[in-house]
Structure formats: structure tokens, C-alpha cells
Image (cartoon, rainbow, N blue to C red):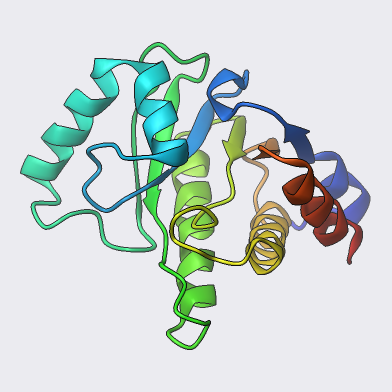
Length: 183
């Protein structure tokens, strides 16, 4: 049963800070397809979470994704030393001017992560800005996709109970506030 918009708004949070310190059931990693760590959010999560995350990622690569995690898909691992019990890794699109289905690919990332959270009955999940770092996705457009996809999913699913967008800088905070203010 769809959730009324008032209830929906209460289920979505915006926090400016460090995603690795969020007290949620799962955090999302804006990973590269190798699942073996990298820079930005990916590197920070691997450093803070410790070697257990990398160990599980290596196992997933060997067993399920020898060519890497396909773009738009997601997979969960332990949270290792993080406050979050799980990390949901997703491989977002590289920005090519918006003419190579980047919006649909980014939307698939959010959908895949939320489906995992729902299937595992995780009550809370925190998202960074997927693909907005080195992958070059424009932050305003990415925020709009993120908010749209989370609202759509939460309007049809009771779990996760809350979704938090975790932003690093003032610019991203303002862009998410604008996206969240739009109906």
C-alpha cells in the first residue's frame, strides 16, 4: 500500500557529514565495478570498514562477478568495522553528457540498492551522491534522480523505514534541499 506523502517525507533525511559514521543498518558504496576499492567514497568506506569488506568483495568477484559488478546493479557485504552492519556496493555510470542513458543507469543503482535493503529487511540505509565524484555526474541532476527514485520506492515499500542522503559539502546539501523541496 502506498505511503502518504507526509509519512514519506518523514522517512527521508539529509545529513552533511561522513557516510562511514552513519548509525544506519547499511550504507551505500559508490563503488567501481571492480569492487576492490578506489578513491573518494569507495576508498573511505574500505579504509574505515577494514579488510573484511575487501575480502568479501574479492570473494564476490571470484564467485559471481569475474568481469566486475555490472553498472546499475548492487551487492551487499559486511560493514566490517563500520557502525553500519552492511555495505551495499553499486557501480554507477560515468557521465558522458547525458546522452548515453546515464539517468536510467543512475536510477537503476538506487533501485538495486533499495531492493537489497528491502529484501534483507534493513530498516535504514544511507546513500552518498553516486557517480558525482570522479565519474563526473552533475550534482544537481544526480540529486534529482536520487530523490525521485527513493521517493518512488518508499511510496511502495515499508522497508527501509528511513533513507538518509549523506552529503559532504555545502553545495551538495543545497542541491539535495532543493530536490527534496520539489514535489
